[in-house]
Amino acid sequence: MKYSRITGTGSYLPPRRLTNADLVAELAAKGVETSDDWIVERTGIRARHFAADGVFSSDLGLAAGKKALEAAGRTAEDVDLIIVATSTPDMVFPSTACILQNKLGANGCAAFDVQAVCSGFVYALAVADSMVKTGAAKCALVVGAEIFSRILDFNDRTTCVLFGDGAGAVVLEASDTPGILSSDLHADGKHVGILCVPGHVSGGAILGDPLLKMDGQAVFKLAVGLLESAARATLAKANLTEADIDWLVPHQANIRIMQSTARKLKLSMDKVVVTVDQHGNTSAASIPLALDVGVRSGQVKPGQTLLLEGVGGGFTWGALLLIL
Ligand code: ACO
Image (tube, rainbow, N blue to C red; front, side, top):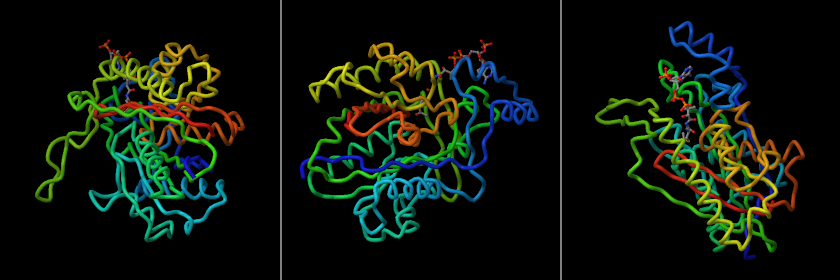
């Protein structure tokens, strides 16, 4: 079997949902001023979900992964590879993938994390695709899971209104018919400072600031151009053009970035899966979450051509083209 193909999708959002009004009220109580109008106009975000204390990325990823396996008609015993894309792991080590593997009962299969922030799921799926195509794995569970609420500075209104928690997953299997057609991954470490959580653990203490820092305008300017170039490179590798795309499933950071990318690719917004309004930016979870929402709503159908694309801290960016 020379191809890899997505055979099931799943997602999970923690039950606590905060509308902009809820968040505005919570922040006002701390003396931090923002508004529903500002958040909606600048980002398109209307609500996000936050995980409860004691819940970890592996728990969200497990719930999403179980749904993806069910949709694929597979069980934990079938899984021979687990990759979790996350920047909010349960622990420093072991990997969240190992913790999730044990909770799922898939003990013994290969399991590791990929850390590429909001591009993490595109990176993880591209790695799983390579492993399935070389025969190293037959049935991979690829998960994006994040609890960004734990690394937000709720005194910084320029970042804390943007992010949410959640998880999405796909089952990727060896196939005789094409699924993943091409991918294009990049990173440029000179931009570390525009989007980072600079703190680290040392000598039993956290050194440096363990909360998210972002130069939003710098991220915005870089994101649009890089997403377009990755999208075009991915299409070229598969000898396809923008006209062949049925659905763009972008990282859900900001509706204005998604609109700009769609415009550059000459795609109508009717062909873009949008969940940022309800989820906020869930980093590595946002693409598989959006994909699952699209599939389960019946919008995104088997046989259609999808372009997934993401950009995030690192700076990292990438795109992946597939037939569902
Ligand atoms: N509520 C009210 N006012 C605010 C808020 C807020 N939450 N945040 C900022 N403002 C104010 C600023 O203080 C500023 O006021 P001033 O003009 O009096 O100085 C004004 O709004 C405009 O601020 P800007 O930063 O210029 O706003 P901008 O239009 O650039 O929007 C935003 C900010 C939404 C962050 C935008 O830059 C953006 O979306 N950037 C990309 C972010 C992104 O996608 N990040 C995720 C990348 S993926 C990853 O790896 C995590």
